[in-house]
Length: 323
Image 1 (spheres, rainbow, N blue to C red):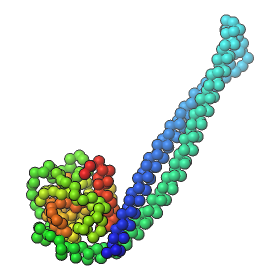
Image 2 (image 1 turned 45 degrees about the vertical axis):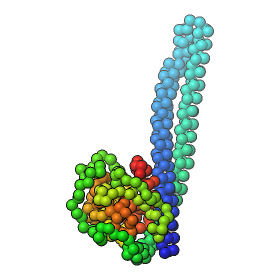
Image 3 (image 1 turned 90 degrees about the vertical axis):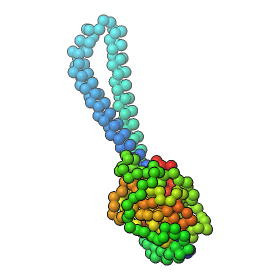
Image 4 (image 1 turned 180 degrees about the horizontal axis):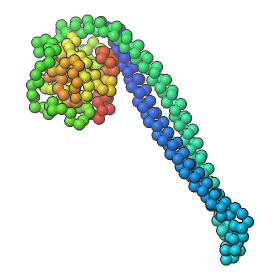
């Protein structure tokens, strides 16, 4: 369907631009925060310096403010040359103090000016982000409207699919233990983990093939049958089901707002509303739906809707994982 394909391409471009704007805003916020700290630090330096100069001036006034002080200084010097040297050193000290205070004040003003420029840039970036956010919400509504058409398309594809697990099973089952390095012993201290172990990547995001009606929407991990498919991070099971070409699938909503999607499962071991941790088994690998062999189709989405996906490989690398 041309309309669906166009919406998918538009969604991909919009989400990428939104991601770029978010990264720019985060970077600029960090810069503004650092400049604010620098301004506070320079102000503290000026306050300390001003206090020291004030004490020096008061001491000078008390010791040399009147004629008796000058007379006493003259009487205490051993020679006129000694007196001249003292006066010269005192003058140099005052000049140095003035220059030091002026330099510190100029440094503060320079950082304040830089902070104002950075804050202005942050404001413009926030405006750009707001515009992209509005565009993203508008696109999500259009995608939701097109979802019915997509489901019909997926249903048509499902009739041609090779479903080797005898239909869609959306009931949680007791886990089978398969020794592949995965387990359900609870959080391991890592915030993010790969969805499967001992795999081979066979398809990447954005690729085209005769097997798909549009560009490929995720990342394919080829694995043997019945291997544990695990959650990549902390989150909540948003939905489970069998959506035509995707076969048995699970959608996780993560704590950072992103959604991950796991498809073609032989079995599902999760239920909606359940809290999951990194490495917790969601199901077993299989070949349900439109699939030519056992593998995991993995997506990262901005929303639960199909078509809002971003490049999973790039997203995983951003979490410190190399697929």
